[in-house]
Length: 320
Image (cartoon, rainbow, N blue to C red; front, side):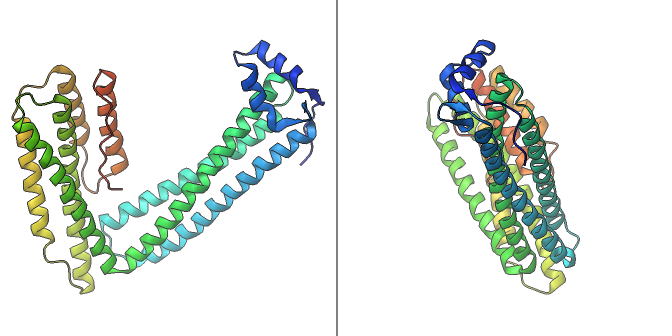
């Protein structure tokens, strides 16, 4: 890697030049230029060392993505014998999409590194290159983390594909979690009923949670049907109480929805948010893309918060 074509320049001189041409504070500029500095002078050697450090971090990110790619190939091959069911297909597609995103991210980081390294022909461009290199490092570290998580999840998916017990235990665990969520909503509904002046924000929050739980139960029912078909194909037993528990969940969620709807008319700010949410969620069918649902619900709450309601913790399905 050849050295950047820039002459050694006193740091204070560069800070003054950048400060005159931008709105940045001198101390902020000094902080960003610090990796380029030796003995209060910005030098080609210090710049090259900084670029090399960033390139090494990026190389680590590329390696992690390569490892995730290899694991994805192995997992996909292992899943070839699985039946043609939505619960398998949706997981495979989701993993493939996430891997493609990582591959695109690491390629874009390489392009940004090249641009930062070549943008050193003026004080301002040198300053911006220093900022970009820091951001590239941070983004590359994020890629490393996400790629590692993806690799771990792919390995878990392969184990899930290869073990009926894992699949069934996972379903039961998710039903347990849904029952806990429904119980929490039940407490809120009971509290609202007992109040002479029910809090509208709490009612809205419980309504959002109920909307999400309706999808959770529908998704669990679809997953249970697919897992039962898989078990029948392989001649293995399927948990006997799943249908009853899902029926109970469906009935409880419907009761909570009715109770929350049986109240004073919503004012415009709540009514508009719920109408928009329903329009989005009505188009969602199992297998559910939960990331999209969580974003939709968070957007509904954020919009309400912008109107002056308290910003509580966002509702999440807890599913992926």
